[in-house]
Structures are given as structure tokens and as C-alpha cells.
Length: 251
Image (tube, rainbow, N blue to C red; front, side, top):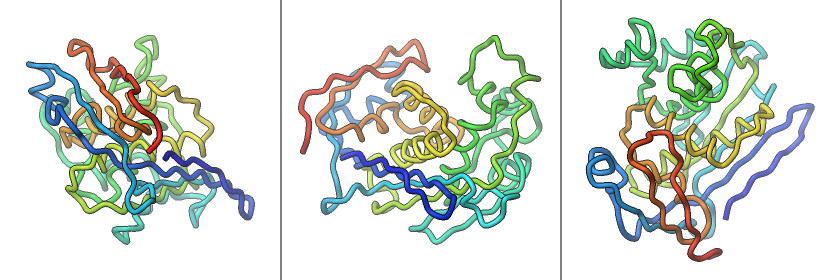
């Protein structure tokens, strides 16, 4: 049960995405470093709803913010609203000081590592991974032919509103953070008219997890695909998408 829709109201178009959670049947933790690096295996999982509802929900709207000068990040279930005015504002308010390696990666004294304790950290990381070319370049999400100077020239998405709602308790073990990130990625991409392939979506979520520093597995977001799945991947390429083989559909 994957629901995607676009609603037009008062000159503002809102993209809405609702995704199921995932249950791991076998292979849990084999997708998480260091196990996935030392002893790569496969994970068998299934998508599931909560009382018939897709529990991980996100929406995005261009021009939906109260001020055309601001980016609004909203967590409905946590009752949090964060208003930001620039990329610097986003990174300085929502980031933490990272490791020396991350500082080298991100080219500054304040590493672009988003603090996952923030209730809108996933929103910020998804916005950055999709819309900040400099952030995408440093995470390896754009081609090597793009220069750092060219990647740095990215307009701030003022007027954009990104809102999420999770029906799952934190730490439920149902893939909530990764799947909520996927819902955000899809909603923002629809609102901003960004074309993404399935592999692009999966890799963007992996980059979001890297930016958050949560150390999650590589298959959680794939678990939201309807049906039962067995997923595996090549350990030698961190950006190689997981292969998917559908075993059953529906349910």
C-alpha cells in the first residue's frame, strides 16, 4: 500500500506520500555495518500497515510556507515547526560537529552532519540531499564531472514546506526513520518536479542516513515496497543499489 497524490488548493500544489512500515522476517542486522561489510548476506522482509493505515506520511508544497522567504519543516506527531532562512541557517541550526573525517569531506570546521536528535532532522537531510548541489556533490550523489564551484551555486528553497507524520513509536524497529526519509524524498521530488528513478530514491535515502549518522541498514527503505522481498547487495560498492526480487505482492 503505497499512496502518492497531489492536491491543488489556493494556488499551492501539495504532494502527499504515504508508505507502509516493514517487518524483517530473516536476516536482520546483516544489512548493518560492520556485518554487511564483513559477512554480506540477504534480508527477507515484508511491508505492513498499522490498523489498515500506511503509518509513514510526508507532504511537500512549493509556496506552502507562511513566508515566501522561509523554508518550513514540520513534524506533526512531534508538534515541531522549524523555520529556516538560508542554507547556512539550516546547517548551523540543525547540525552537530562531526568527526575529523566528516570535516574533511564537507570542507569546513562545521561538518555537514545533521543532528539526528532533532525532530526535523530527516526533513532537513532530505531537502539538502535533493536540493543543495554542494551537499550532493560532497556525498557523491552527482557526477564527478561537476566541479565544487558549480555545485556550490544552489538557490535556497524558500517558500517550501515539508511536513511529516509518523504513526509508529520511536525505536519500533519497523524501519521508521529510513521509510520516513523515503516518503520525504518522494514528496519533495514531486513538489519540486525532480525526476528520480527507483535507484535514485534508494541511494538518496542512503545518503540521508549517512548525513544523519544513524548507522542504519541499507535495506530498510526497500522494505516499504509492497509484498514480500528478499534483498541483497554487492558489498564493494557503497552506492550500488540493492537488488530486489519480488516473492509475493499485495497483502
